[in-house]
Length: 491
Image 1 (cartoon, rainbow, N blue to C red):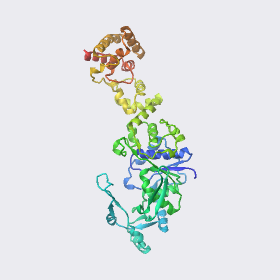
Image 2 (cartoon, helix red, strand yellow):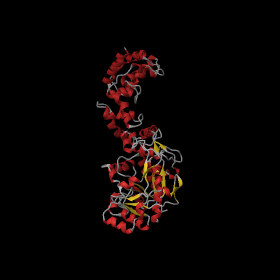
Image 3 (cartoon, rainbow, N blue to C red):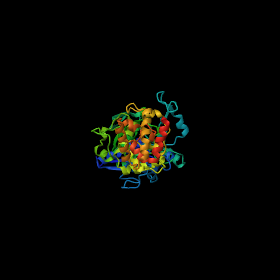
Image 4 (cartoon, helix red, strand yellow):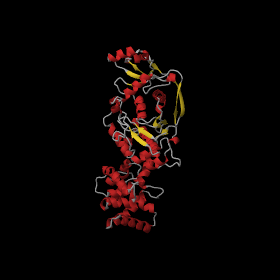
């Protein structure tokens, strides 16, 4: 086969769904692994579903994930236009539809909506739609296939609305091969005469796909396995044109943790949703790559460059892939831990400033939370005590492992308060030295000295950093105020 050429062909209809992102990623990895070409094509033939701003989302997502296309609307390499509405305006699709009419593989259909409605049939009690109703399908009866040339000419001259339909065979079988699902054969009597050109002159998604993939010399087509049922119709089109079919790779379904299809209402079905939830683009890409595929050495943390190196589409699993939010959070946390401190600080700063308005050392706070969060949204709950001491229950002073309770905690705080008040050097090192000297002098365990102090200055069960760091960041006045509040609570 010639040089590998893959394409990502999204429709500008809203946010980038995780399933679409995975398709784009796999198309990109297949091309780059073999030194091939990755193409971006915009499929905007469904004008009713077009959303303003959706095109910007596509470009923003591609740039944010690092999936940089070699050809596309902004990079014409001789196969353009790369936007289907522009290709439609050039008459490309109607030209090829008419070629099929000449071959007898397609025909004009002038049937009204009313007639098509009358052809609807229920498909059986096993197939229920979202509203609990039995689904209905329209299987066209080839009524207009039998129109004479004269009748067709007459209707066209009269301006009667029409569509152009594929003339699918009703006997025999159609077979195609998919990398993941193998050889699939269907009875031709199951095929419907699908519409190729709609009454508004635009091509259907299926027809434009086939024509564009051929003209752009696409070698590998990656898409969700919901398109498996449409593929025989594609095969019939390729055969009618006498074109070579691309290699098909139909990806497994992505489900949520309850093994139900990811829904837009789930909050984590799109790339932008995940960014808003504080995830890193690199971690999202890494995670999405593993939704149905695994590396030969079972590595889980991989950069885009590493994925390019090891990706083999033959190892894609046919079983549904589970979108495990716990795993994504873990993976994101690993990326944050490895991140350069300066980069982390710049990314974390907006989240920190949402919580902290006081004049505190935000860089030190950033360093404290860096290894203790999984997403940027976790920052708020980790650092809110710096802004304001929460109202807490004194039961927190009781910790069996540390061997602390309200009584001995009160003793520790009363002992240390005057020592802290007299302390002139209020650096982290000085505070640490002071507390450790007290622990040694009293002959108590570290936890018995540290737990009461950290609880008093934070009012929280767990914190990023210990007593020394927290007190030095809060400063002397605020730390002492909080310790006095603790003594009052415990008294």
